[in-house]
Length: 276
Image (cartoon, rainbow, N blue to C red; front, side, top):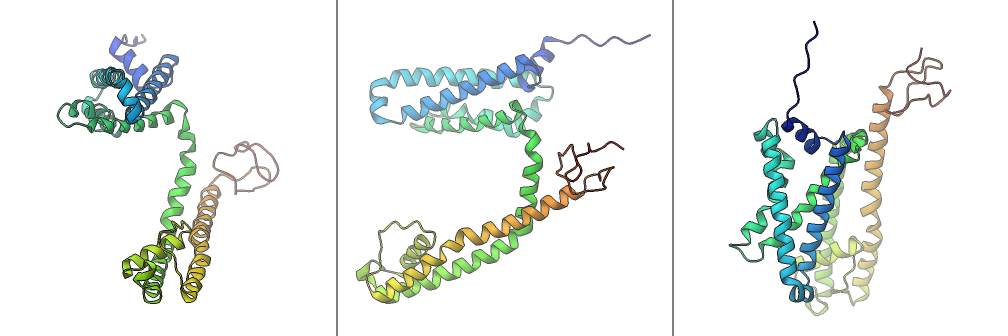
């Protein structure tokens, strides 16, 4: 005798719609939620414009409270239908959901705190679940491994950069002096950082020939800011990707093993992988 499945309650049905995106209703709920989040953040941004706030202050206030009450009801509803309410409340999304509604209530006591509502944009992270972007987590794992493997090289590189800007900033203070804007060694270091990173605000500029010579040197060194870390990270990413792909099963036809993690066909002979 087969056991019948227990009847699903309305609570279970709503849990599947709100917390899962595997059904048509669930995807529709999440899309409506994301649109509401974007509109609420847009209202907050418009409210920060002085001319618009002067003319549409009451409209923005009503819209803000409508969205806040909507998201508050949604947050409480998630707690009610959750199978583990405390686990949801303490989860990353639970904390973000709570923080997205608190600023409006706090603004009743602290004027201007409602602008913190832009934190609602963090709720857009739910789009990863809707669009099934978890398939790309393998690529993010390669990036994490690469960053861990290259961190000591990057730290050494940053130490060299910091030493360079301290030396160059001190030299420019001695060469140019306060009359050119280099009023102190920290001020000279600030100029060296701005110049080395090729930002070039132009608020401080060398006027002597020797100062311009050192400025030219640090400008050329600035290209290493991008080239060196990029080369280090790229090398480690290639190594990490090679190690992860090497763990794949070999092709049954030609024996080749170095395939991408999600490869379905052999890179060398084109045979379908996993078929003997």
